[in-house]
Image 1 (spheres, one colour):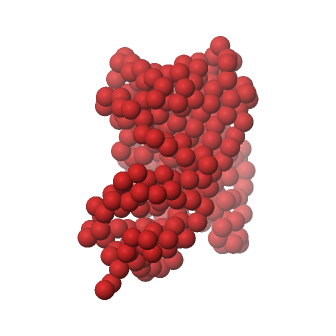
Image 2 (tube, one colour):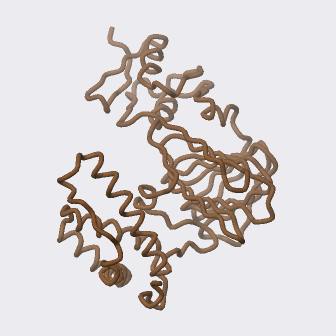
Image 3 (tube, one colour):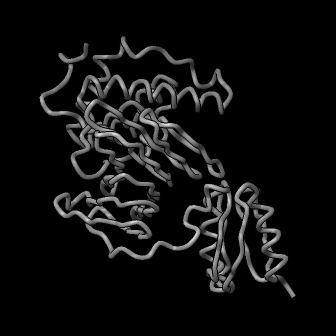
Length: 321
């Protein structure tokens, strides 16, 4: 339907996603014209995506003015509209330029992902082939099944995959590379600094985005951290790596700062650790459904105190004498 609109070279998905975002902001009356023009001027591909949008404008539908909706409803409306427009743009611009090793992800893709969890939320999803994916806190992913492949694109956060028997290859893409399942159960965690894969059954193969020809095999009981440019040596997987599936976090002689960094993933806002207690060792099992209650218990048992500057900004320090 849109074939006549596409230029000779496909437009990258992250560019189409940004264009869709700008389109929604313009339609809602909240776009900054100077910032929009700067984005368009940044590259020829940006301008080509914007021109494609203008030609398709009559097919993209209308949006209610943002000011006519409550803030939360307006945000939800924008996300849904952006996702719908991105799907149309991808069909028109051929904009899925992922390559064979790595997902060129962007914030827009996480915001419009089909599978999402908020901080503190977990989610179970049954896959069409009989497998399953479980999403941990603050995660975003897309599922792409076709006649030739099974693919999950993890934009951010953490997932656990249990694959089903199927002749099609099963791939998980992150911004740092591609994991190929070899009949397995495995977890993937994706942050800005890199991705980690933990294998619970059988094995996986890992290809870094910048080195797709180099294959690293990770066996059951091992964990591998990798970036787009390379991978570390596989290590023995830490105990209780999948405890989040049961809503628990198990710490064994962790520095307090490490524990708080993990707990912060399950709570909105900022959770800081005072430098004076950052290295204090902590051991325990902590429930993930009420982080503020965990902090209260932790402070009571370890001579600490938590100071709330706002509801979403807390710092743990030594208890005042």
